[in-house]
Length: 487
Ligand code: NAD
Image (tube, rainbow, N blue to C red):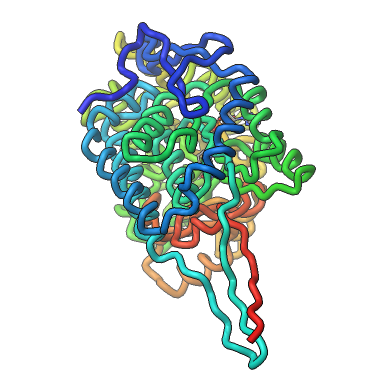
């Protein structure tokens, strides 16, 4: 099964207002982070294209009949999308590898997750029901949910197809039309997903895909009066900017933002499991993950032994070609992003940190053209250090010892972020106590980065607002209405 967007020489058509056509804005290109080679060229939409796409989405919402279809009919289309994703899973995974440079083992998992997301929301769509309150004698009430209309899905570059599926599937299940604004550097997966939705029978105009600069395209979409909700995943400062615009429009938003998650290894933990979990938590996806466990706290009595084992395993991680199934860490998304990681590492060292491993680019011909960086561990700092407070979004772990539970919780909770946390312990009562006391939207106990689509996900504080996934994920794209029936 072939994909739409395989020719890197031709300008790629976008999905604008129910048509596959070129944007009328500037030319832009997407490159393979492992080699710098161009893998897609397109013309971004003009502001006129943005308006046309949103007006067409509004028209399709009102007149295509999608919102009025019975839930099981919308569910059938979502099931078909899941099936089509699975049928072309390998080409999609290969394309995503080119789009953002993740190792092929990871992009396969992301494609599988996108298919599962559509399947889950197809099932959830079929179970949508209204709530009836008991009659009071002279009336009864019903609580119903109505789709909001045009919603915007604004996504980052780190997990393209999965992020877009998490917004598209529930929004379409709700009956909404969607304008997708993928990250500028990774536009390909959103375009493929729109093509698949159309092939699965979604009426034309229900999806537009508008890649391009966030400060132009994303801003115009957010401000448009016909856009009734923004579901955003990205950096905290961008999220706050969007939330300010939304406040003026009195528009609901959901925000999946940054993180600085704490992983905690208690004195009674199984150290082998903990080493593997901490390693995976920070270095999978090259640390370019909102939930990366980037602050490590280890019980002081085991600190030296634990760090010995962790550093040895981290130094042995296979950094390399994303095509190779054995590769554990691929390149970073762009050279500019690697520069920012290098600046953070330099800052950590300037503030008194000591480099345990990494802190540089790998040597060798394979790495010359890609944005590679070695797994890096810095010790000797406390939780107030810049690199323990700010999100680096790369393969950099700050490791610190702790003395007792109070000390651990005080440090772990000393962050503006509260997205996720990991606890390794053999004592379930301690896990419960610390798990309840730590500020985080998700807490993993003796595991890390495991996900279930049926479990709501989101952050507190600067890590976000609202929840994605879960059976009720569809309702965030709907307004609630109370209906009173006189008897
Ligand atoms: P970013 O905030 O720079 O961009 C995210 C998206 O917003 C992109 O599509 C971008 O073009 C768009 N955008 C930028 N400026 C905009 C504006 N003014 N108005 C509207 N849209 C605008 O983030 P990024 O660098 O692409 O992604 C990395 C960030 O995303 C990290 O902070 C990471 O933690 C976060 N993230 C969070 C989650 C989560 O679920 N909590 C998941 C993945 C990534």
